[in-house]
Image 1 (cartoon, one colour):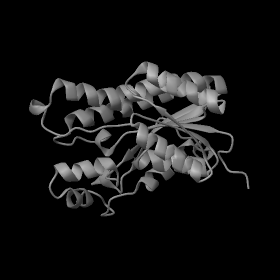
Image 2 (cartoon, one colour; image 1 turned 180 degrees about the vertical axis):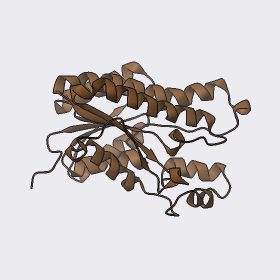
Image 3 (cartoon, helix red, strand yellow; image 1 turned 90 degrees about the horizontal axis):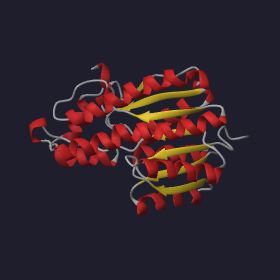
Length: 252
């Protein structure tokens, strides 16, 4: 059987671990060429090699998503290597915890630079190439923090609300050009960021589990399934949507 993404190319930021890697691996299993873009060379190269070892096509490009030139270079390398760009998953993100009165300007700039400006820059250059291809699909990583307030996470919450709004605006801007843009809003997922939360919050697992309807922490693969589906033709009538993958967290 022909794989559904055969001959297509997906660009994924923050693709070396967690949700990003799970999504890159799933795209590759379904036939897509994959570019992994993140800052850590060792993790990025290892992730791309794992995909190649499993029979997929993968490229790693070291990229700071808050740097315009580096984002342009990563997307240019993708198009140069694979011949085009069809899908993008803008997933690179960082978190910061603490009350606003204890948050330095530098922390705010760093979180906004990666989580919001990084998505803005990525879409800016992804869309340029997708317009040349006659369309495409983009998914941005938001969070349940993009749908509600969370005490002690003000900067992170602000960045994810920004991602939701930016996604809706650009989805409307480019809908008639054949480009669909959505977000996924993960709840507590077993990722390196979850491990950071465990180190900073006593009883983190119990707290997060209690805030979900299904009473468990999700897996990266469960988010990857949603991302790949939103990029697929099966989701062809879905755009400008913030899509929770949160075990019912936003409803509690």
